[in-house]
Image (cartoon, rainbow, N blue to C red; front, side, top):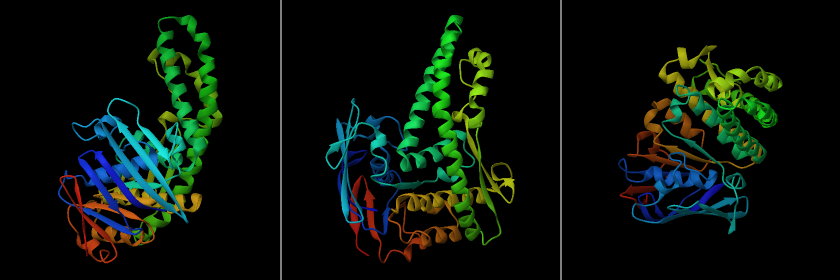
Length: 362
């Protein structure tokens, strides 16, 4: 799977661009705040239906304009699919696949698979549990429409339950209606927990091998799922915490409070690991995502590297670039670093300046 053509109109600071990508390495270079990350963001939107940087679609539209367009042509096997994204200032965005509008983002998943890797992802281990849950959920949603549905339904029910808990504080008689939401929370929550557990087990196995190679077999990485509650205990925990939930107006137990822990040589790397160990563990997990997508779908995802190389030492840079030779990769950087130079012979190189994309010939 790879992106053949990407067309942008009034997206962020890019007034108009048609970018012909090759199916290997594509390098976008230029000073900061010129529009490099905007191009990666547009690809991510085509894959997931949402930005990784903002929840407000209006911020994606060029200043002073009312709408923006993204069009991507995706080649897989011998077929080409077209994804169209139409962003409007004060309206819901429209997305179509091969000219057919989709009703929800879940219908888009699978048309284009991507793995995004940014400097923020290197902080995955240090960040809050919500970031690690997002890491799991975004990958599972790309792989399974069923998981996407279960997750969406769970959070809808969670919101309804929390609203009811606050109303019960003022009217205790409403307590008798809580069981309706509890039943649905268990139904969807148990499936979310089980899916996450299976996924983390798989990514731990694959990333452990990758981590061992990067560290020349000096470190052992294990990623462990830490559910807030086991699926088999969920109903009981909800029932036992009702009084506490009413008191605080929020739900104590459920997958909305899950976490994952990274262990290096049996130590929690968030607490005991160096910054280098934390970054290597995060890199291993992101590379494992690529392998899982390949296995599950038979397609190689598009890898988006947003100014990541500057955050890695030379050895990790070379390992990363050597391991993605068969993967279409779009790299942003401020300059052509030494680690990239040996790959530029077959790479497409673009200079980005003030939102203008200029293709360079090597």
